[in-house]
Length: 366
Ligand code: V47
Image (cartoon, rainbow, N blue to C red; front, side, top):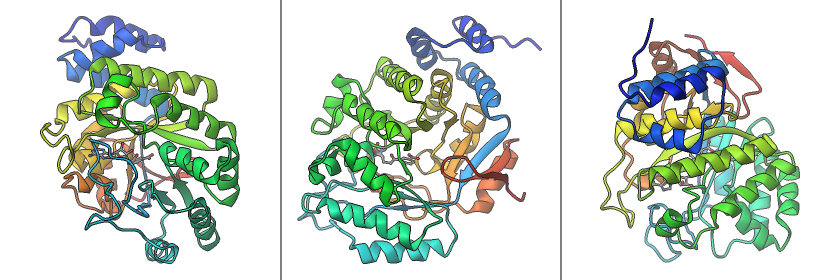
């Protein structure tokens, strides 16, 4: 069957995709700008199926956010607060361990740990957190601390980043989540998170982590003040680092939620943009094994549709997500395994339960 694109500019891109050729920066811009969303989805599906067949992955995981107190003031963030804010919280290590215990009763395979940059916590708190969790839950993978936190921890530790990462790794850190990348381009980054580490430093932290043997994820925050060219620049820079290290596992486009942020005047992202961000990521990141649709951000319904727009992962059963809910996310805090499986099956894909690094995967009972 011959499929006609609505936009003739997609035809040469299809030829490249079919030949397994790398797409250029300009191709990426076309993919973000074309009105032919279904055409983009169709191209992304070719790559998705080439890399992952009909598999649609999910994980049994829990998020732990140790504190919302943060030295930074990012305009896109509604989670981080100053220590004297009425809603400021900080969990003691005992509280973190008992939260984890309550979660582990549900037999999770991963704790995803991300928090603010606390002005007063010493490095030892973070090291003891990792060590204490690993001692108590040796079978649970610890995916913890964004590049922004790791850069801060190295400064707190007064050690080179590489030594800090090696110490955390030895203590039980399993891999690094993709947060903090936001958008690398200086112009947009200055507008949304001026006092945060640069995009170059974010990439350097991940390169160093890959060098010590840690795998990691990558993200991109979209739907705020960035241009299409800046999104493509972000993807190309990730692709270049992946060529060098091969250490990235999954890419997760993060839809900006404006409520309670300094950018509250912006509209939330559309379903169109959410699907497009996933599809273009799949097409540009030809060396990333997986593209994740984080249902908390884009709703289970869009995450389900994204199985035909390049994504091959629905993330997890997450309980108590705080960062995006602070910014107005209205999704439930928990997505039961049964619902994830049913949605995947309805989308025509195979529900595959996985561990963090996709090393242990099996078909879930349907
Ligand atoms: O770095 C903060 C983002 C990230 C908002 O690696 C916001 O598997 C939208 O990185 N609107 C933290 N996004 C969460 C994160 C993540 C989530 C799920 C899976 C993985 C993974 C990583 O959340 C932050 C920032 O980019 N964020 N505020 C907001 N208002």
